[in-house]
Length: 283
Image (cartoon, rainbow, N blue to C red; front, side, top):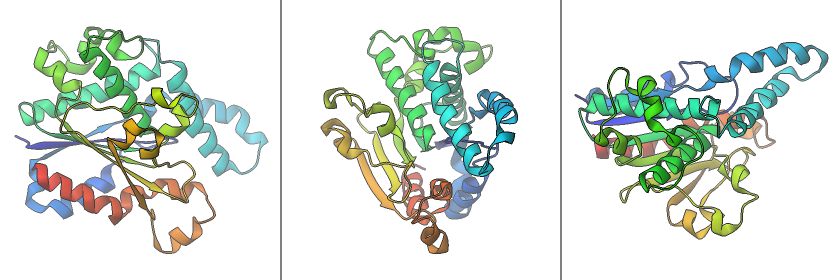
């Protein structure tokens, strides 16, 4: 039986299914014997997006230059557009991504044989995906009307989430974040999605009274943003932590921004050290 769970959520752009292998190995080394008590799950939603993105690239990519940067832009920003444009559809990629989060949370509860603590590590666009999931889940918990994603009708997703079993009231509370203790976000893009809103409407998630949110951003990463200054409500929930993602020669190269700086957070001790500390507190 596992004592705590870490669930990772990847970011924008082309992403292999084994995207969290390296950080899993790093944590195994850091946690030692405690690693056996940690359940690790991963949310992989790129399979919903990449086939169509690859098709479009094959149609238009041969006529342009700067292939690597253009692919980064095409795949990355069409991720965000695809997710946002399908919010109200029960069969769209927004609901599909949320279903994968719910499935990983359900598996975590099974691995811990109950309501153990959960930590989520989300990169880039994954931060927005996680935030939207728990925002919608909170509204469902509070009996507010939900018109987007899986929390419009969570029962309709029981089979992909739990297989042949029905979701119990305890399962539903867990899926809504009742034991989410920490959210670690890296290269977070939430400001891009809320920039057009009035300050009073820029509200963070707060799934439970024990929840903490640490947001890591590199000042040279134009896709990664601080959060606490978005609104007083965000300031009450989020701790922003500036880092030099990658450091060393890579840090010097990325002073003049390129996409590499956005992908280095999970390799950096400035993230790994506090993540290790938090997991040790919960194990």
